[in-house]
Length: 386
Ligand code: SF4
Image 1: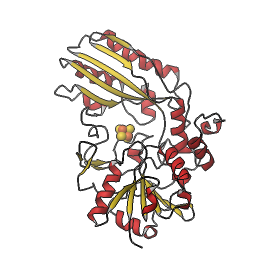
Image 2 (image 1 turned 120 degrees about the vertical axis):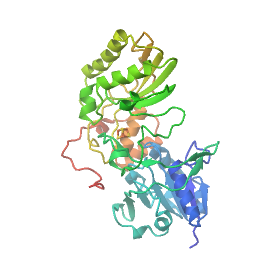
Image 3 (image 1 turned 90 degrees about the horizontal axis):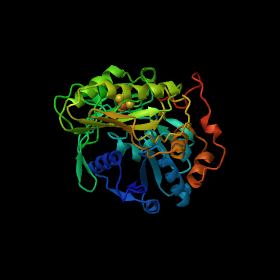
Image 4 (image 1 turned 180 degrees about the vertical axis):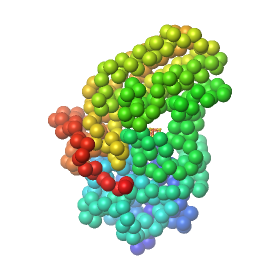
C-alpha cells in the first residue's frame, strides 16, 4: 500500500495545525514522507491520518465530526495524540492508535508499523491501543507557524517543579533548560516563576506568573511552594521600577479542601499590602486570572474531588487599590459549563456520556455522577508512569 499521510486540521484552525503536529510533519518530511493537511471529509483520500488534540475539550468536536463524517467506517489508519488526548478511550470507534506523549524521533517508523512498539501499550478496545511515549531529546530543528511564519525552536520539555496537579511535570521527562513558566511560549509577555520576579534587575512592562492557590496552606499542600513573603518581595520589586507594570497572575480556585477562609486570606493579603506599602515608584497593575481546579491524568491529584461550585466564574473587578497599586480580577472566559466539559473530557471514559456532551448543547441532564469524590486508594485509571 502506498503511503499517503495527512494531518487533520481541526475546527477553527484555518488549515493550521498545532506546533506539536508541525514537528511531526517536519520529521516525516525529513524522512521523505510527504504530508498533506486534510479535513474530516478529505481524510478519506489518505492512507494514514494523524489527529492532534491540543485542548482536553477538543474531544467533543472531534467526536462529533468523526461521527458525522463516518470515521467509524474509515478507509485509513487513524492516530491521535497530543496534550488534549487525555481520554482517548472515548475516541476508540474513530481511531486505531492513540498516544499520550510524543511521537517525534520515531514518527515514520511508528505510523508505518505501530505494532512494533508494544512498550507502554494499553489495550483500549481491541485492536485499538494507546501508548505513552517519553522523549529524552529536544527536537533539533526549528519549525515555522502562524500567519507571520514565526520560527519555533524547542528549548525544554517538561518542568522540574512537580506541582501535584500538573501534566507538564508528571507526564514528561524534564529535558533542556527552562520551564513552562520562565522560558515559555509567549514572547511579548515573559512568564516568570513568581520567586524569580524579585531578581529582576530591569523593568519588564508586562509579565506573567503563576500563584495557584488562595492561601499558603493550599499552595504548600499541592506542591506550589510560594509564601506570602515571596509575593511581597515580588511586588516590592515591580513597584521599584518607574512607569507602569502589568502582572498577569494565574491562580487556581476551587482546590479540594478550599474554604472561604482561604479566599479571605488572599483578599486580606492584597488589601494589607496595598494599604501598608509606601514603596511604589511606579504603577503596578495585577490582574488575577482564576481558573477552577482541574487536575491532569497521571498526576498525584488525578483523583481529587472536583467541584463546580461556587461558580468558576469570578467577577470581582477590584480587590484593592492605592499608592500605585491596583489589584483586581479579570473576568474568566470559562463558566461552569465549560469547566464541566473539561472535567468530563479528562475523567470520564463512558463513551455515551462523551457523545451526549458532543452532540447536545443544553447539558440538561443529571451530571452528579461527574462530581463524585474519588478515594485516594482508588487505582489510577492509567498506570503508565512508574
Ligand atoms: S504548574 Fe507550572 S511550575 Fe508547576 S509543575 Fe506545572 S509548569 Fe511547572
